[in-house]
Picture 1 (cartoon, helix red, strand yellow):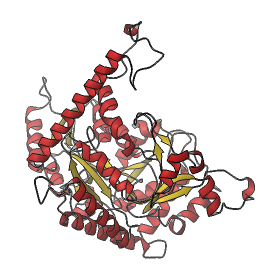
Picture 2 (tube, helix red, strand yellow):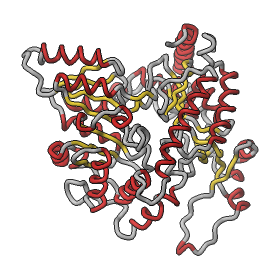
Picture 3 (spheres, one colour):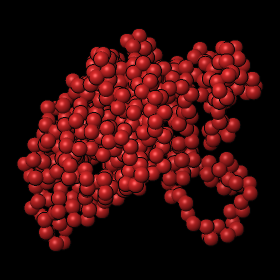
Length: 529
């Protein structure tokens, strides 16, 4: 529960920001001068002829609230997203309205010298392809002279759960590079046309066997896996019941389906049962005829909460009333369970009791795209009817090989124990980090064994302050505020990796402990933080 003092100051903080935002808008209108006024546009002339592009509140929120702290978001990186990462330095010449890459130190003037004097500074060489690799690699002095200014940070924000970004050359690199000799980077077509290769078929068979389903179909984007699959499975005669904290891709897919939508309280199987019972008894609105089908959608690990699904109880309720279960394992596949088989394995649920299983390759496998695993009949239907399969460009064969190689490591088929070591390291690192953050008195959401750790900030001013203090200390973190989360529930979200060492985590914890004192974040110990 949010402390009363935190709730009160959060509302007060937003009130002050909104009040001063309106004052600045009023002054800009009266004096006809401001960052968001065009010098070339006469606002009194023919404005009624133009269509409105943005709602008033959306435009105001972007200008007067988001732009104040947009330096904390969309930071460009210049290295692989491993346990450590190089983040390019950005500057703004118009009060954070726009951000620019700082670039080379020699061309940035006094500002470049200021950024280059930091403790965690690094220099990233410009990408310049060399014909036939005749040019020798740049020296460190050349890189410092001509390279872009970056910050070398401990990465606590990327989805690199099993650490394939850290040891890619040793685990997957050889096979992935070799695949380019036989396959293109892109097939230039959808799976429904000419976009299938033997690697796609191999990957789909591998996914189905790994999860324990009859068949699987792969997509080129995890987000679109949900947004295109859900409308193919349910329609206007059906009922879709969704956990209230489900991901926006599920929300978008549900809205696009045309099905009636109900939400149940997060992880509350009793509330779910009540909704299903009422739906069966009352039927469809107006006609009272039975629903065509009832589909219940949940996630394995909720990405903003760090909690895993109460899967056993939810599956039991759905089986009792004949409802179908759709499980989104975007964050849990490869990261949960003794062998990485996800939430079903972790919770002891037979995958035969789950009708549709969705997952992505971006979090634990070092790739991209997603999959749907189900019965042969369901998968065959999706291949021909799901827009993500029939119209979207197929998954890159090179990415297919990356995921196949990652599966080989996880399954121990590479002749080593590296896969099991990764799973163990991820679990140990996650639990260690969660335990230490909790011991600090921080309000940490989620469950043990989850690699996602949200730490509550609450107050909007602390969103930017926490991000900037971390960045200053060489920690790359993700902060989240409204509208991605409810207005009172701003947070920082740490994502832990098997690639992190205990030394990395101890260093991060030491810095976070200092920041918690500065920003008053110890809400477990004191209502004042």
